[in-house]
Length: 125
Image (tube, rainbow, N blue to C red; front, side, top):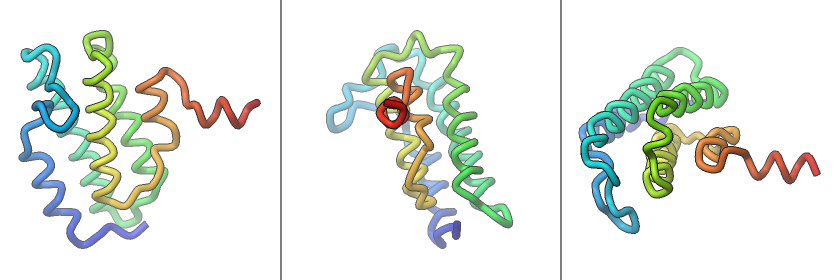
């Protein structure tokens, strides 16, 4: 994978943006006291992606591993995430994927959102 030239600036912008605010169809974080906690977790994922992007050989697998690590950071607060908040977490990861041109999370986002990857279920039937 080749890191897009504008990725560095996009990571800086992504990290600087306030997270979990009401926008489009997302009503904003359900529990306001969780905003800084969730934002920190998402920004750490952005830093993880940035480190892979700066590495000598960024690969899909390296980014997908960072997605898995990033999502696992929500394990301690997963029960406090309502459906809209989980969707917003996934959309932040999709934004990070778009920055580097990653096309697949390897099912990690589906696992986080639904508890399983529907594609793998279909493939196994």
